[in-house]
Length: 289
Image 1 (cartoon, one colour):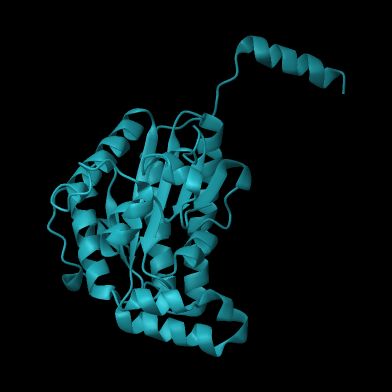
Image 2: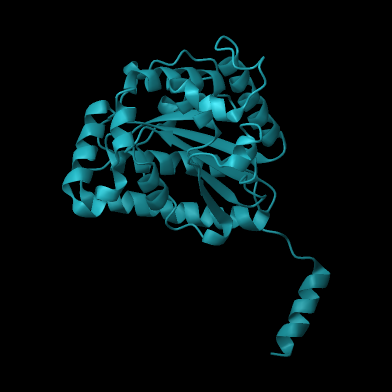
C-alpha cells in the first residue's frame, strides 16, 4: 500500500524554536472515504501487531511512547485505536494524574521511572513526567507540595534544569536500549470547544467533562508557551517530539500509527535462533506426541 504520510514534517528538530501558531492543527485528509480510513488504519495496526510480536520475542530493546496534549486532544482514542491489535502481554499503558503523597516525597522523575517498559515491551505514557514542566509551569503553586530545596524554586533556572534532567534521563534510557517517541497532539482551541460541547450534549460522555477542564482552557496561551518551550528544549535526534495535527482524530491516528511503525523498523530485531541440540530435543518430544 502506498504511504501518503511524510512523518518528518511533524518532527521537532533539536533546539528548534517551536512556534505552535505556525504548525497546523489540521492537514488535508489522508483518506478519501470512511472505508479507506478503516482500511489504512487496519493495515497499519496489523503491521504494528506483527512488529510488536517480533519486538517481544527479540527481548533486547524497549519502546516508550509518550502522549501529551490539551484536554480533549484525543490521546485516549489514539492509544486505543492505534494499539488495538497489540498483544496486551507485551504492552503496558500508564496514565499519570495528580501525584500521591508518596510520589511527592521523591524527585519528579521517580513515579514514571517505576512504569518504564521492560526489554521486549512497549510502554505507553498517557501524560508523563512532562507534566512537571507544563502544568507546573502554568500553575507554579503546584510546586509547593513538592517541598523542593530552597535553592531550587527559581523561575530563572528551575525549568531549564528540569529540561536538562529530562534530556539526560532520555539519553540514558536510549543508551540502555529504550527507544522513545513523543507525541504532542496539536488541537486548536476552536476544536476543543466543539469536543467540549459534544461531551456536554451527549449524556454518556458527561463524565469526561468537568469544571477544571474549563478552568484550564482559560490558561490556553500559557499552555502553548509552556509546550513550545518544552518541545524545543527536549526534542533530540534519539528521542524526538512529533507535533501531530489533532483536529481530525482519524488523520491523527494514521499519522501516529505510521510514526510508530517507522520507529519499530529502526530497531534491530530478530526471532531467537534455535540450536541444533535444541532442535534434536524438540524432534524427540514431537515423536512422543
